[in-house]
Length: 71
Figure: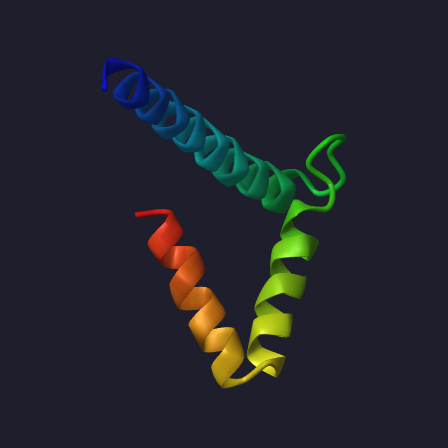
């Protein structure tokens, strides 16, 4: 059980780091414009939101699932 809880805590920490880097990339992309390594983050998120909006109820269900993964 210690191994499983250790792996869970590692994945939790990695997830928090990735979400933080994603948020930083969005802010840098919006403020700086054309910045290497974070150039397409904002456009990818806009595309994701548009595709979820075009999907209707399926997009709403997908958005709920994605939000529950981050909780």
